[in-house]
Length: 113
Length: 111
Image 1: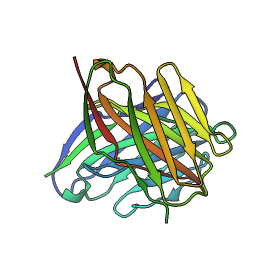
Image 2 (image 1 turned 90 degrees about the horizontal axis):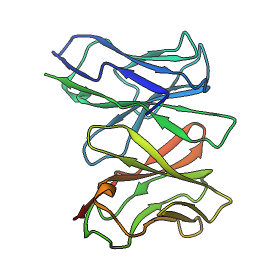
Image 3 (image 1 turned 180 degrees about the vertical axis):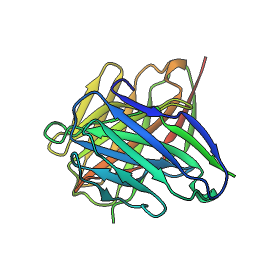
């Protein structure tokens, strides 16, 4: 997972609490993504960004907000956590002008009680 | 709507066996198909990427094929080893920043 760093690796929240997940890259790729992975399901796209200062909604954006103030960082925020947001969250980056290979971070395991 | 399916969900084989993992997709309008490996508690590692104009890609003991007309991709692993035990996911890039992932096949190679 070299090149994509996610923090924190683990977190436990109570319902209603807020938190921010950080994704940092050192590969200078334009595109960044936030996915969630749930048992028995494929990864689902939450939000994505095609460049600094831009964000867009993915397949399951409700309950999440994102920001990309700097090209190398993509933040995922949960304003009021719910048990349904218990999941493993992955950040990915992609070189838009290349082969479109996606590179993933190691993930953040979030439990909402 | 593009859907990606991987069957079986789990597979157990003895060491040394050659095996094939299957991936099917419902819409042939894809830009590429990517195979990933995921170890427990870890992120996804890209194994092979096949562009829509290609039929196959090879890396070491791995060979991935793509048949857009039938909506299928296979990942062939030769001479399997216990270290190959992991979950293998396929993902179809459909453009518009959308990548549709299968749920994965969990592989266990017995020593």
